[in-house]
Amino acid sequence: MAIVNDGGGFDISVREELFDTVIELKETFNADFEESYNRLEDIYKKMSSDDGFKGQACEGFMELFDILLQFHRDIKNKMPSFFNEFDNFRESLEEIKSTSVYKELY
Image (cartoon, rainbow, N blue to C red; front, side, top):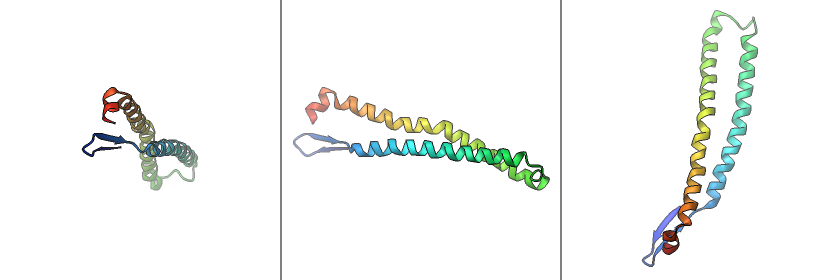
């Protein structure tokens, strides 16, 4: 978004393709993340049920794996709100563009 005053009034312009790119990124990220998360959880379940893998030497690794899974869960829960900010910004921008003040300036 750019706001320019060239002496004859204000010009407000928005590169809509940037918003479209963010929405596309959001959808791709969510799909890729879901797939990666499911694979990681599947590997963890297989490893934790494997008697050959259970041993004192592997306990630290398993704890780290638990932390990583929790981190993934946290990101999964928090990222939608982050991406929603872009949607909110677009809606707010559309509201601004529909006001008489914007129309007078533009």
